[in-house]
Image (cartoon, rainbow over all chains, first blue to last red; front, side, top):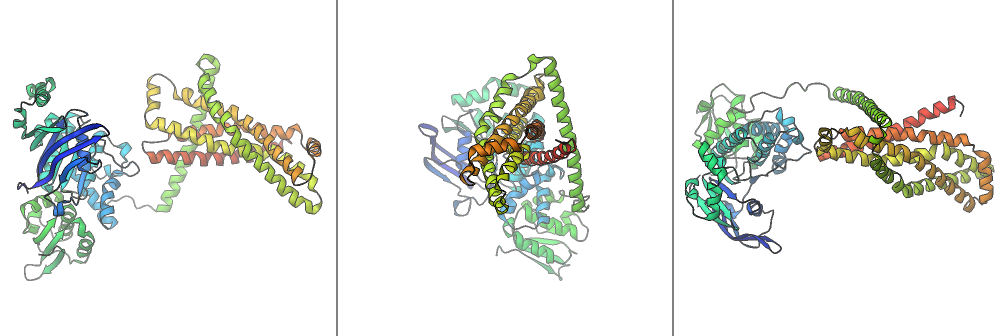
Amino acid sequence: MAGGRIAIHVEDLVVGFSDHVVIDGLSLDVREGEILGLVGASGGGKSVLLRTLIELLPKRSGRIGFPAFANGKVASRGVLFQQGALFSALNARQNVQFPLREAAHLSPELLDEIANVKLEMVGLSREDGDKFPAELSGGMTKRVALARALALDPALLFLDEPTSGLDPIAAGEFDALIKTLQRTLGFTVFMITHDLNTLAAVCDRVAALADGKIAALGPLPEVLKSDHPWVRAYFHGVRAQMLHLGA
Amino acid sequence: MTDEPGLIMNEQKSNALLARGAWTVAHVERLEHLCAVSPKRQGPIDLSGVTALDTVGAWLFEKLARGGAAGTSESVFVGASASYASLLREVHELNRAGLTEGRQEHPLIDRLKKIAQDLVADSAAFLRMLGAVSIALGRVLRQPRAFRLTSTVYQLGRVGWQAIPIMALITFLIGAIIAQQGIFHFRKFGADSYVVDMVGILVLREIGVLIVAIMVAGRSGSAYTAELGSMKMREEIDALSTMGLDPVSVLILPRVLALIVALPILAFLGSMAALYGGGLVAWLYGGMSPAIFIARLRDAVSITHFEVGILKAPFMAVVIGLVAACEGLKVKGSAESLGQQTTASVVKSIFLVIVLDGLFAVFFASIGM
């Protein structure tokens, strides 16, 4: 899988709102089968970049392509939104079944079985499937949202701060879960995260977004050596130092 | 190699099931059919012809494997590539708990049981709310300074003052319609002057207050439920409690008191508007001059009829307010539940208002009013 093919190809991308340019001539390649972590300042355009990649925001200029896929189009992609974005009127199982129901004609029995498989895959029990989003804890919401994002076995998975709002144990478990599932199902992951642990534990490569461009790109040790001032401040700030001391 | 999935039994090769093609969600209809008609597995499942596999396909293989003779996943699946094998191993552990059991009760009995339970729970919630509001009211009577005057006046403005135009319009029209129908049909007996008696008694005793109460339940009861519900949803009510404030005396008591004050006033104005409408129709359609209409009205109705009508209004207001508050506090996290409880609030309060009206009719008849 990880054969060097490019899953997402971004070239000279410009995105902005009225007179405010957020993404300014950004270029980035995401390899097939890798987990790429994107870091950047709050309000620095990480979510804008992700939303542009999944076509929720229009681009001003530049190119976005998916060369590894037939016709350069992604047949299926999964998105894990920051707040889960579960449909509040459906229970967890129905949330997972929703994309399947829309995509194919499955018998109700098989639909239930697949939903149970997906829920257990993300570490939930079948009883959790009967709960409604309002009854789920933060960690469970993320897990259900991940199961829903994975419902159609997408080749591309977009994660928007998957571990934000989780305690360190739950966040660690979620990291391990993403890594395991990625190894088994072989999808490509584009992930926004602020969690330095996640970057170290899960991501094959890290991209740092500063001033609307990619300031540093590569495996974490390489990015750590970057001399871009913002990247240095991010990885060598007090909070990051505390993490290194603790480790 | 084609993508069209297939599954055949190979009797020469130790009854192996030969799978080929793409076992993915895109072909799921065909795959389900294949698995349904496939003979029971006796030998291994040969995956060497499979061109694509996703979780759905892996689960179907796992189901085939579980349906047949015993064996571990390693011995059952042959010819699978490394990545397929790891997916199959992953799925092998999942969904082991068997089919969902314990839901075997009759759906109709289940439904009836649910309705009965809801009825008991609703009655209990209504009584609890009545108790809580009474306690809050008692506290306010002992310490008048705790009374939320601003809030009550504001609510009074919303459910009373702002409701006057629509209430007056509707009751005016209803009074006019009753008078028109009465004149049209009574004329056959030459009894059209009795229309005044009918309009007067009907409006003052029943229609005026009933129509206004139903309108208030739809207009203000639903608003109360939606407000309290969204406050509950966004944990505002919890925030109030943690500040040491009683949500009942802060939010619910002012609303219920505003309704208790507003409904009799609205019922009175509504009754007057209905009589005005009836008089107008009697004049323009029935040719009865306003002076005669008023004179006949004075003969036909007594203050008792008016008392019977207006006495019911505060009780109806209490019912509407309490039902709206109960339903509002029942709202859970989802947007759908807010809609559900708002609907339930209106339906229940209109139902209870009509039931209450019936009980009052029996009561007033038995005391001779």
